[in-house]
Image 1 (cartoon, helix red, strand yellow):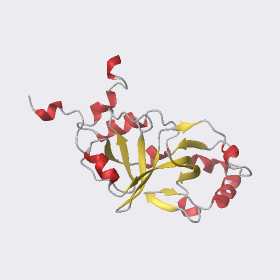
Image 2: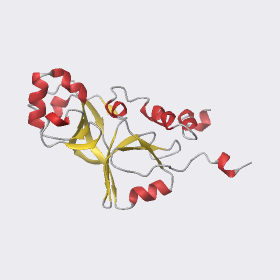
Image 3: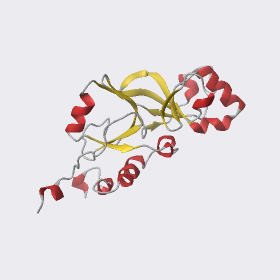
Image 4: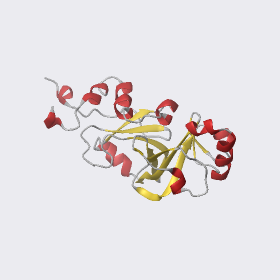
Length: 195
């Protein structure tokens, strides 16, 4: 029997880059990053910055930003770094000053006061915005080491994945969408002993 058939942690075929996803491998024991999908917002020789897409929390944004009228906005935990800072992704970049393109029509940040004004004028715009408390970060070379250890898989991102309202199945759906040897990983139980 080929050793490759027994390798349950296939190697990446994509390099990490801005606008790609990091998908935790099913055996990652780190409780914070277990079964997470992270959008890489930046990746260069200095390191990487990303936001966890599938860790939504129930919190009223008005409690975090008194005086802002963004009630009903989706909020997630973006990562363990700078958990006192609020970040946001959106697909209204061309209308929002200061936003930074990440990929396709997904942008990072921008003028919060202008965002509030836009949402007041059209409350439906809020479905095009996701807020995150904190971020996930890697110093120079750290992500590459973790990729070498096969802690992460790299996948292409879609706007639909990033802006999904229900993030419960993002991890499984992303692995299935990667196809090939990656798709079966989506079916691994969280605790193999319970299988």
